[in-house]
Image 1 (cartoon, rainbow, N blue to C red):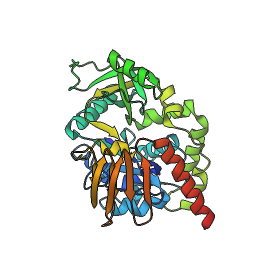
Image 2: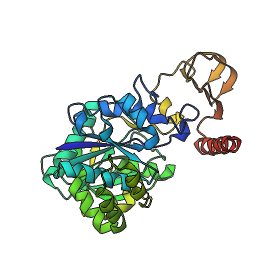
Image 3: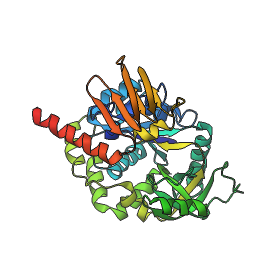
Image 4: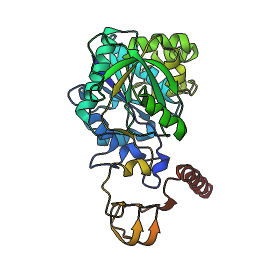
Length: 363
C-alpha cells in the first residue's frame, strides 16, 4: 500500500518575523487560506488516506501539528528530539511503517511546497508508485520541468526512459527516466545551459520508494545509521519516549541524498509539470500572490504613494504606509517589524541570526 511521510520539522527563518522558530512557515497560511502543512495533506486526497500518513517533525511542534490536522492521532507523529537532517528521520519512518506493512511504498513530501496543478501532481505520484511496483529495487524522485533558469534549486539530469509502457514526450505528460546525474545549485549561465538541453529537471525533494528497499540500501551505505536504527526500533517510542530520544540522538546528521540516494542501485526520475515551487523565501511566495498595478504584493492594511515592486505583509490590523519606496520587503507582526531590500536572502538570514543572538543575550 501507499503511505506518505511528510517532513515538517524545518525552522523557516527566511520568513521571519512571521515565521518564528517556535511557529515556522509550514504552520502558516502564506499562499492561501490553509497552512502549507494542511495543503500538503490535502493534495494526497484519493491517493493516501489519513490513517496512512506519518508526520516527521520536532517535539515542540506536536501541538501545532495536531491542532492543524485533527484527523491524525499522536501515534502518527515521528517526533525528533533534535534535528539530524533527512536520512535518520526517513530511516525511522521506513522502519515504523514496514513493521505494519512490510511491502509498503512510501511517498516522501516536504511540507512547504507550492503545487498549482494537483491532478497533474497526483498523476506524477501514481506513475512513480507504479514504477516502484514494477521495479521494486528502484528509488524514484519527482522532478519538475524547469519553468525558468532558476539558480536556487538543484537539478537532475535525465537519461533514457525507464518505464516499459509507451511514453508521451510532451511536457504535459509525466514520464519516468533513468537518472544520469545530480547537479548542485548552478549559476545563471549554467542554469540556462541546462534548460537549453531539455534533459534537466528541478529536484523537488519528493521521493517514492519501497520501505524495504530504502532500509536495504541504508544498511549497506550507512551501517552506523542502520545500527542506531536497530537499537531504536527495540524501544517502544510511545511508552518510553525518554529512552527513545536518547538513542535517536546517536544518529549523525546527514541528508538522504548523501546517505542513500548516491548509493541506490537504481534511480528513476519522473518528469512532470504541475506548477511546483519551493516556498523558501518571501520572494518565492510573491510569485503566487496577486500583484497590484505597481507590481506590489500586499497582504493586510496598506496605504501607499509612489510605492513599487514591494512585498508588504501585515498580520494584524496594523496599517503600513509607504511613500517613495521600491524593491522592499516590509513585514509587520505584533512581535517585530522587518524592512529589507528585496531579494537579499543571504542578508536576511544573517539578520535573523543576529536578532536571535541579541534576544538570547537578554534572557
